[in-house]
Length: 327
Ligand code: MLT
Image (cartoon, rainbow, N blue to C red; front, side, top):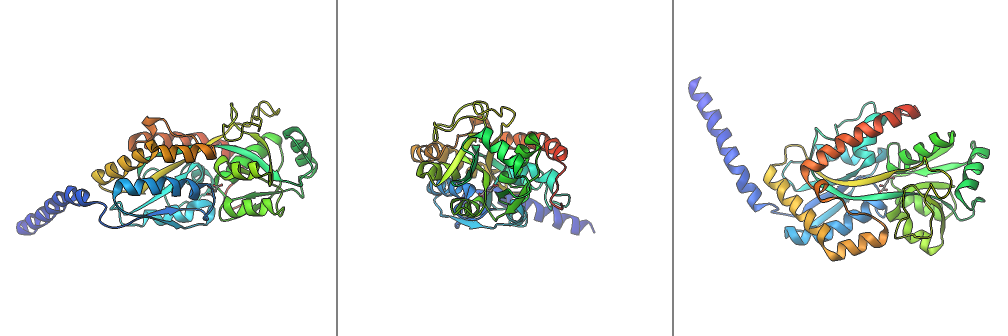
């Protein structure tokens, strides 16, 4: 019996001793980055810009894998089952790692306890956009139109709990309407249908909106924050446009599976911070209207505390709106 205990203790010590060595050689092969939404949408766009630069710092390719479905919770669940060795990571966001807690009664992960945070990647303004042919031409007219057409208006979004769903939910609660919703696997495909005029409106992240607004293929009524977005300086804020209560900023965060060794997380975080300091990354994200995070949030501890605060912020908002993934 005593001999067996000794053997178990020796094996544990061996594994513990091997971890820093494994971290030293990390990454020993390409890293897979799970994006829980369709290709071409805001999460995918930001991820590809950051991953390209991070891969230089890590000395290995980063392969993007789009695992879309259920408002981003399918891809997030997938990460929790991956080997916690740093070779599989993901980009989650306000929806997958904060709003999901209140929206999904049977969520198969806890956004903090089942992940090893790496760092906040960026924040994004939300813009209220509409198809080019929608009659209203400003936010006041849109609110009136939505109230008058509540039964037939259709709101595109990226699935229950996604950013586009949650942020339009907030808008609907302020206006006092419950229109039709049309779920997609990401706002990449939702935006394609908005441009084609198949759906009426979409609350989307600026990085997915700026190119379309500049090209004149959609309308943007307002940006839901205090100041105008530098990428779209002609679009008024919700305060300027008459709906000051509608304020929302969302974020993207990089995470690894729970149990990923701390030295591996440190390497990934170092590569993330190097990418965020890369002038090319900064220029590309800025052109799309994204904002880089405060330095304290681009850290594992900063991100953990931030996600906890965001869950506490979004849970009562969603409960008050009376929506869950099952209704
Ligand atoms: C996407 O990448 O498609 C979005 O982040 C979806 C969303 O949450 O609205």
